[in-house]
Structures are given as C-alpha cells and as structure tokens.
Image (cartoon, rainbow, N blue to C red; front, side, top):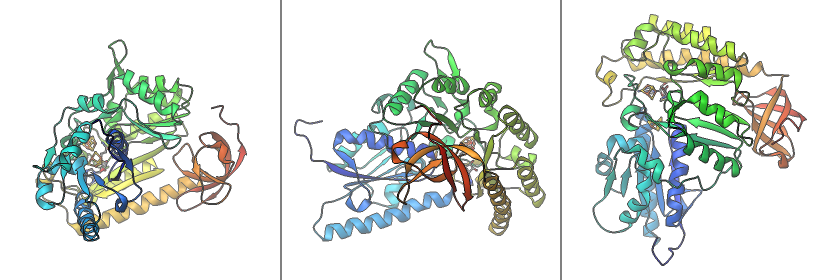
Length: 457
Ligand code: SAH
Ligand code: SF4
Ligand code: F3S
C-alpha cells in the first residue's frame, strides 16, 4: 500500500454456482480489504463489482451477460447524475472458460480473473483504475493462490463456515467443465488447513464444511511429509474442541474409501448427511459419462455408509437427457432413486458445454429432457417430503445459526441440513440445543427447545 492511505471504497461481490465460489467470494473480499475495499450490500452503492461466475450449465453462464447488461445501465445512470465511475471484474469459471471473449461481448468489463489468480486481484484492480490495456488473468498455478491469499480469513460471520481443502478435478466426466475451469486436482497441506480451521473457530465458527470439487479424493501433505486422506483430516478436525460439527462436499463415488466410510461411524462430529452424486442409474449412460462406476457399485457404497451410520441421510445430483439416454435408461435412474431414497437432491437437464466430449454427440430433444426432468423431480420431491415428515416428533440436535424474523425466534440446522425454527434466547447462538420437531413446513421444520445444554461449547 502507498504512503497515503486511500479512502475506503465499496465492493459488491455477486456469487453464482457452487459452495466453492461462496468460499472464494469471501477470500476475494479478504484480498481486497487491504486495498481499501469494504463490502457493500447492493451493487448500487459499490465502486467495484465482482461477478464470481459459474460455467456448469448454459443458463448459469448466460446469466452473467444479462447481469452485466444491468450493471452497465446502472453505471451509465450514475455517470449521467455526475456520480463516480464503477469498476467491473468478472471472476470464476466463466472467466476461466471464456477469458478475453467476455471483454468482446461486454466491453464495459474492466478485467477478467480466473479462479486460480485471485491473489493477484489487488494488482488487477489497481491496474484497472489506471488507463491502459485491460487484463485477462487466467493463469493456473493453484499453489500460489492459497500461499498468497491472506493467511486466515479476516472475518467470520456466523457459526457455520466453509473451508476449501481440495480444488480441481482429474475425473473428466464427459459432460463437465470443471476439470477445465478449475484445473487439476490439488490438495492443500494439512498444517495450513488446521491453522485456517483454528482461525475460523476463534472467530466463531462451530460447524465447518470441507469443500472440494472432489473432496473425498483429498490427499494432502501431513505434518511429517506423509499423505493424509480425508478421513484422517476429519479426525484431526474433530479433535479440535471448538468444532461441534463437520461436513464435507462434494464427493465422487470412486473415492469413497473404506476409512472414509468407517469415519461416518466413528466420528460423532461428522454429520449423518452424505452428498454423493450418481448422475444416472443406467450403466450404459454411466459409462458414456465416464463416471467409472456402475449403478450397483454406487448402491453398495450407500449401503456400506448406512451400515456405518444408520441415521445417514443421502443427497445426490442427477442429469437427465445425457446424449444416448433412452426411456429405458431413464427408467434405470428412477429405479435407482427408488432403491436409495434421497433426503435431498439436485437434478438437471443435460446442458451441452463447449469443449466437453459429450457436447459433440447426438442430443436428446429438449422436450424429452424436460419431460424426464419433471418425472424425476416428482419422485425426488416426494422422497424429500417423506424424509422431512419422518422427523416429526423426533428429538434432534439443532445448531443455532442466526436470529429468526419473529421476536424470540432462532434459526438453526438439524444434523441433516434442514433449517429449524424455534424459540430460544439469542445468547445461545452457536450452541447446539436439543429440540423436538413439532411441524414440517415446505422448506423447513419448526421445533420446541427441550434442552439448551446439549453442547458444552
Ligand atoms: N464435483 C461434483 C459436482 C460438479 S457440478 C461431482 O463430481 O459430482 C454439480 C452438478 O452439476 C453435477 O453433479 C451434475 O449433476 C451437474 N452438471 C454438471 N455438468 C452438467 C451439464 N453439462 N449439464 C447438466 N448438469 C450438469
Ligand atoms: Fe465434474 Fe465429474 Fe469432476 Fe465432478 S467428478 S467435477 S462431475 S468432472
Ligand atoms: Fe460452477 Fe465452477 Fe462451481 S463451473 S459449479 S462455479 S466449480
């Protein structure tokens, strides 16, 4: 920073896509704080707007351009009123995938920065403020990013926190852009992660969700140079007193190792909730997707996890209408869903992505895709409702995360990631209380607190 401290400025970050982008957005704000940027609540009050974008499906990627159009109008209106200019940066996976093309499609953008170059944001912003050519920074040295970002997150806004432990993907599923936008698999060293977890706990985090595009492929360097898997990392984190709950997302069935499955039974702090995408139930389609496992192998993994932790709730991702998917293949997906029983699920119509192998194959019609998606979602919604209903009358532990809208109300989460509303003193924020589920609502549960002393944190 220069000798004269710059006046504080306002930054607005809009996050699209997955939880890794949510984590990255907080880290980008961390990186820009020393440059004089505080976070703004709306883009209208911002001097710098960053769009942290997602390229996973066409709709997600196109949304960026419509948002840029709106920001352009806002900037023009501000200028007409004699107000200050606005800097606009495009970050995230669209930035990585499209690079300079973004500047061509929307010339009001000042700079483009890929997910592995966030540590250079201060420099990019300083350059963007000065006249000169626009920068597109989509270099890939992932180690540098974690090394050069501020060592610990600056602030933590509640009892739950994300921690990226692994980034990138070497699986190359035939439909997916992630290996191209996030690069090769990289696992952060254990010591760095334990230090970041300690800092998160010191600033109020009680539940930590470990993030990775393939988080269960984690293989980071341990303190003595040996390689740790995810199960060992979870064990070390569970030994930290301030941590009450642990979760991890997203996993690939191929990396569901025996010790990780066993960890679901042996680590009490590891929540009984597993997000394990399968994408499809037909072996032919799984093969064409390059998933490297069969439907039966997936079901067997779920069974083993449930044997280790009987109250485990399972969540999944599905794609319908992958090239070559017939009605019979789709029926296999429905059968797999019926067999597994999902507490939660995300399902999508296949979206051909430029540069991925499946994009060039003969496509299933849009009408068939949307018909299958509707039928699949009907089944998944029914399963979700049944799961929620099965909690009625149950005594559960709720981690209180925030103050509710009604006076005296708090909102927390059940072990199965369900939002729970209950009356409790605000002083119990960040604590786990015991509560009885009294009502199942559309997207949450209502409960009565029965014991405020479920945790000693
Ligand atoms: N790493 C995770 C998830 C990656 S993206 C995994 O391995 O499962 C999140 C989800 O988006 C995927 O699980 C998949 O269901 C969906 N998805 C990815 N590419 C897609 C595409 N081209 N069209 C439709 N859905 C897609
Ligand atoms: Fe994409 Fe497959 Fe990698 Fe998941 S495992 S990020 S779906 S390529
Ligand atoms: Fe989207 Fe990139 Fe995440 S494509 S899903 S933001 S890794």
